[in-house]
Length: 123
Image (tube, rainbow, N blue to C red; front, side):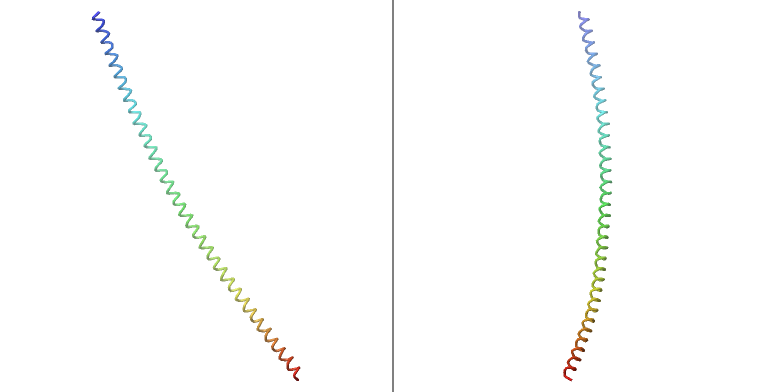
C-alpha cells in the first residue's frame, strides 16, 4: 500500500511537473505571439503615421498651389479691369471732345446765324 501511495504521489508529481512545463511553454508561446503582434501593430502605426504625414504634405502643396493660382487669377482679373477702365475712360474722353467740338460748332453757327439775322433786321 505504501508503495502504491508513493507511486501515486510520484505519478502526480510527474503530472504536475508535466503540466507546469506545458503551462510555461504556453506562456512563452503567448509572450512570443504578443511580442509579434505588438511589433506588427507598431509597424502598422509607423506606416500610418508616415502615410498621413506624406498625405498632409501633399495637401499642403496643393493648397499652396491653389492659393498661388487664385492670386494669379485675381491679379489677371484686376489687370483686365484696369485695362478696361483705361479704355472706357479714353472712349468717354474722346466722346466728350467730339461732343464739345460739336457744341462749339453749333454755338458758333447759332451765333453767326443770329448775327446775320440781327444784321438783316437792322439793315
